[in-house]
Image 1 (cartoon, rainbow, N blue to C red):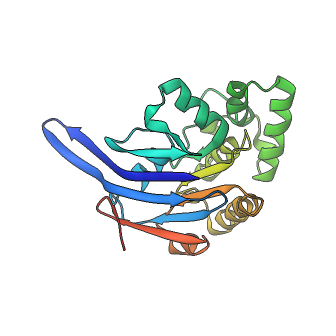
Image 2 (image 1 turned 135 degrees about the horizontal axis):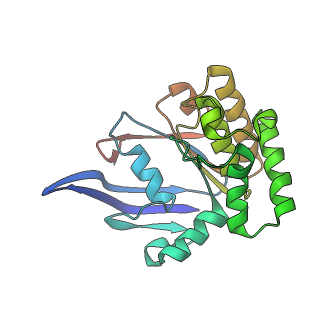
Image 3 (image 1 turned 180 degrees about the vertical axis):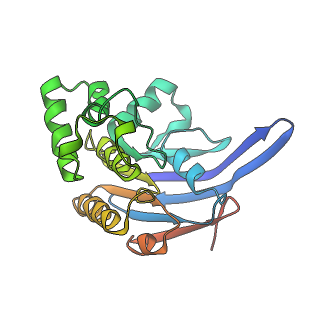
Amino acid sequence: MIRAVNLKKIYKMGEIEVPALRGVSLDIPDGDYVAIEGPSGSGKSTLLNMIGCLDRPTSGNVFIDDVDTSKLNDTELAKIRREKIGFIFQMFNLIPTLNALENVSLPMMFYGSSRGKRAKRAEELLKIVGLADRANHKPSELSGGEQQRVAIARALANDPPVIFGDEPTGNLDTESGKGIMNFLEKLNKKGETLIIVTHDPEIAARAHRSIRMRDGTLKA
């Protein structure tokens, strides 16, 4: 269970304060499949970063499995992200000096998996996302869509119970996007929680429920 209580996030630009979230509360039960929709600047990605423990709110609380993450230090938050969360970033965030196999293996190294186990799991995931033949290529040698698929494989490396996706199909063609969503939805059917930020109504319509945002608040 993920529970957000009155989340507020204010970014400071010099003396100017820019509110990104204006008191957002929501519950996401285990195994749910949620789409977060809204126009650019509505606070979608900011909300995802808060409930995914990538950033801290200015005020309010995020509970994960009844643990108040506002009381955790950076090391404890990193442990939650490592063990419970897989994050698919919109801008990939791949390590440019590592090849696809090494990028996918990296989260497992932090988790403490053996080299052999890391390599086997990374190879399996690259095959699933259709990149088995690109395992030894670095990000600069991959197309945008291929980099996105590497990022998705990396997010699944530690078999996390919660998967966050910030526009996970935004850099894919229609058919590749459908294939990735089908794969993520299979994981959801097995019990994993899936939370997707999207501006694509077709992707949002696939979710069990949709949350709409506007101006940093949940739209009724």
